[in-house]
Length: 577
Image (cartoon, rainbow, N blue to C red; front, top):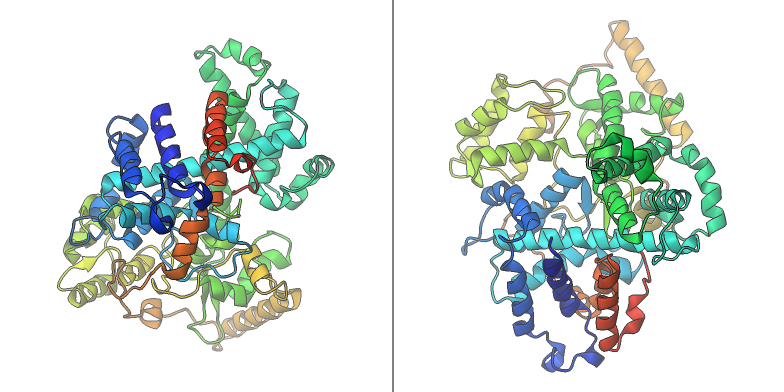
C-alpha cells in the first residue's frame, strides 16, 4: 500500500473509532452520531485507489474468484455474514491467520477476559459494519472487501510494530538509534518469543533472557524457528546487495535501523503461518499412520498412545475438549475416534493466540474450495459440473483425477434435489460431502449456526475458571489404550469388537442443510454493537495508531492525537497479538 493510501486508511479508522465524545465537536452530530459525510469522504478516497495501488490490485485479483462464488444479496453485494466468511477464507488460505470476528458463529465470545480483548476481537466486524450501516446500504462489493482485507492486514502489521517497540523497551534500546548485529538479534529473538508465546509478554528482561536459554524445552520448534528467522534476514541482505553473494556478510554487520527491524518483524509475522505449517504436516503424517481404515479417523486409544509413550507432545486432548472442538466421532459404540482434519485445524493447535488473531495450521480444505470456486465462479452448480471439478482435484492424500464412488455421486444428487436442482457451494451439506470426498483434508462440519464457538486451550481453561484441563489424565489415556488393545486382541481371535467403520457416510450423514446466506440467521448487533461503537476508540487506536512504523509517520500520528486532546492514547496499553 502506498504511503498516501496507508495514511488514508489510518485516518479513516481513527476518525471512525478514536474520537471521544468530549472532543467530538464538529465531527459527531447530535447524540454522538458519527458524521456520515466525513466517513464517506475518507472511505471514498480509499475506494478510489483500489485500482491505483499495486497491493490493492493484487488483493483484488486474489479475492475476485471467491467473491464471484459467494451468494449475493438483492443488490448484488455480500451480506455482512457472507463477507466475514469470504475474509476468513482469504486469511486462512493466504496467511493461516484465524482472525477473531470473521467466523460465522453468531454467538459472541462471552468468555473474553476483558472488554479491551472483546473490542479487539470485534474490530473486523466493526469495519464491515461501518461499510454496511453508515454508508446507506448493505452492499459490500469486491472493492469494499479488498479495502477491509487490507485494513485488517494493516491492523496485524500495527500489532507487529507495537510488539517490536516493546522488545526494544524491555532491553533498554531506543527506537531512534541503530542497533548493532548482536543487539538486533536479541531484539528479534525477544520479538519472536513473545509473538509465538504471548503469555510471556509481561516478563522482565531477566526472565526473558532466562527463557531464551530454555525455550526449546517448552516449545520444541524454537531452534528451527530461529534458524528460519535468521534466514529471512539473510535473504533480505542478499536482495539489498543487488544479488552479489560476496556482499551478504558485510551487509549483515551493518547497523539496523528501526525501519529495517520493522520490515524483518513483519516478514516473521507474515510468513510464520506457512513456516509453522511444516510442523502441522508432520502432525498430519503421524495421524495418517494411525488411521487403520483410511477414513480420516484415529481410534481414541491409539490417538493417546503417542502421548503415553512420549513420542509426541500432541495427541493428549481430553474427550470432553475433543467433543467441544467437534473432533470426536462417537457414532460407533465403544470405538470413539478422532476426526483427523477437525483436530488438525482446531484452535488447540494454533500459536500466537491472543486478542486479535492467531496462527493456525494451513486449511487444505479451504485451498480445495478455492479451486472449486475458481472453476465454478458461481454460488451454486449443477451436480454433474461439480463432480467433474472435484474428481480432478488432488490433495496430499488423494490423487486426481479419479472416479468418485457411486454413493458420493448419489449424495450430490440428493443435495441438488433439496436445493432446486443445484448444489450450493457454501452450505453445510456440500461441506459434509467434501469431508467424505477428502476425509483427511476437509473437516466434518458442525452446524453453521452453532451456538458454541470453539475455544483455544487457554480460553477453555479460563472459561472453566481453571477447574478443567484440556488434557486427558494419564489414567484416562491408559484406560482407553487398554480397551483398544482388548478390541484388537478379540479381533485377532475372530471375536467382535474391532470392526471396520462400515459405510461411515451412512452412519454419520446428516440431512440438515444450512446455507451461508440463510435468511433465518439472526446476527443482530443490539446493545453490544452500540457499546462497541462507543468504546472502540481505545482499541482502534491501539490497533491502528502505530501502523506506520517509519519515524516521520510516528511523529505525524502523535501530533494528530495530541491535537484532539488525547495524547495519552499514543502510549501502547496492551498488545493485540
